[in-house]
Length: 151
Ligand SMILES: [Zn+2]
Image (cartoon, rainbow, N blue to C red; front, side, top):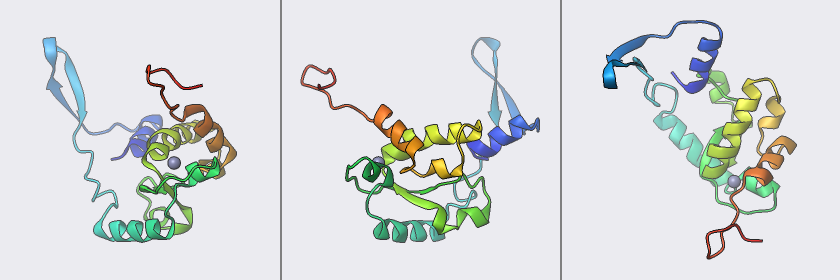
């Protein structure tokens, strides 16, 4: 079960399967019984092939391109979180090429905003205005030799 499914389940009050294990100092820690493998969640060999092909056709990160930078694509991202929905998963019109940083930092932030209702699906594209704003705000500044940001 991925983050979103878990999040949605928690919000709707569904109790997830859990296993209780003794932790340090007698404190009990809750673990999910089975997160499910990424294969199980749809990331199969067929996905690998489709993703590779998509990345060949879209060699640059969309989020970087939107702010005038050229960065090689690293991840095929589902614009709208598919939450295991196979129709959404395979809808290549809703895929976007992105670098690791955009995927892990900017997109993650956008999806949290999407989940809380702050932004809509259109803003999940990494060249949307919301995304560009985040990119500018969060992009790593280059560090000077003394370790402080340049400029
Ligand atoms: Zn990028």
